[in-house]
Each structure stands twice: as C-alpha cells, then as structure tokens.
Length: 213
Image (cartoon, rainbow, N blue to C red; front, top):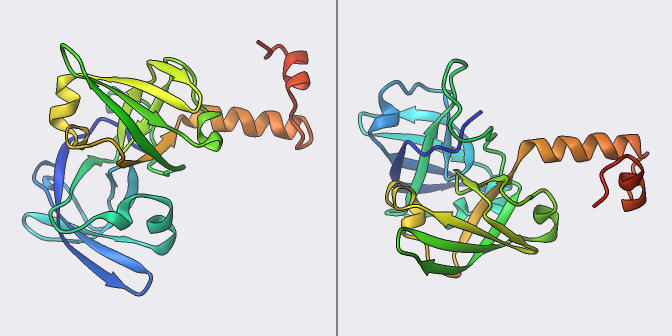
C-alpha cells in the first residue's frame, strides 16, 4: 500500500528484455536507504518487487501484463520515474490509499500555465471516469492528486509548483500517456452494489436506494 506522495524521481539506467517481460534497473538515492530484496516500490504508479540491489540502483521485473496495461513498456535508459516506498502501518497518510494496481492509461490533452503552477486536463476512458468524482482523489503516474473539475470524459487538475518540481509531471507534455489508478473506495462500492443488484445495476435501482441525483 502507498500514499501517492512521491519520495524522489529515479532514472532508468538499463532496460533488459527477458522473454515477454523486462527487467528495469533504476538509479535512486533516498529510497535505497532501507531497501531490501522483495520490498515493494511504486514505480510511476506501478507496484513492483525489488529483485536486485546495488549501491546506487535497484532492479524490478515487469511482466507482459504490466507492460501492456501501463506505460512502463515505453521506458528507455534515461527515462525518469516517480518512486515511493511501501507505507508503514504507523506512517501519516498524507495522500490517499494507493495500491499500485494500475487500472489503465489516460492521455494528457492540455497544460495551461497559471500564476503559480499549471492546470492539467486528462482524458479518461469511460471505464475509468465512472470512478471519478469532483474533488475526489485520483493517482496519475503514482501521484496522489485531487480532481478540480470533472467534465466527462475529461478531468482538470491543478498542479502546484512543488508537485511539478518533485515529480515527473514537470516533464510531461500534451499527448503523453499517464498511468491511472482510480480511488479504491469507488470500486468496492460498485462491487457491493452490483452484488446486491444481482449483477444488473441500473440507475433506477440506485435511485431507489437513495443514490440518485
């Protein structure tokens, strides 16, 4: 489990193909302080297991399913990634609960400079946007962000200078693809309601239970 608060930006040192999977060597500093083999590290929103360590880098293995569902397949030597270590039980939860289980990818369609920071607009697919609410949480490339506006299928997010400086969002350009993990709570609520509805959830049923507009 993670919080979506990026600890540092790492750099891809090497990408090695192994069948349908890839082994990524990632240079880092802060997160290596207490890193161990088998630890979980969130790499740009994807929970991966440390399989090897050196003095200034660690290695993770991304399997075919991960490469197809996320942007990790686009990484090359020199690429930057957001890094976060797994949450300790007694840590402060400054962001929101993030699993590192990417739901899909979304395209960055607009970046508008502001007096302080930028406004970013991201276009989501329908299967992702249904879990998003105005002022709710969403994880993009491993970063916990608040949805400022929802105009389906697009969401607008306000990025402060600190976020732009301390994460890879400062490098992103219009047309780039981002890893998306929607809020965990919404998916559980949907599953429970679907079960209650016998697998056929309708707007009429939601209204009858008090969830209508």
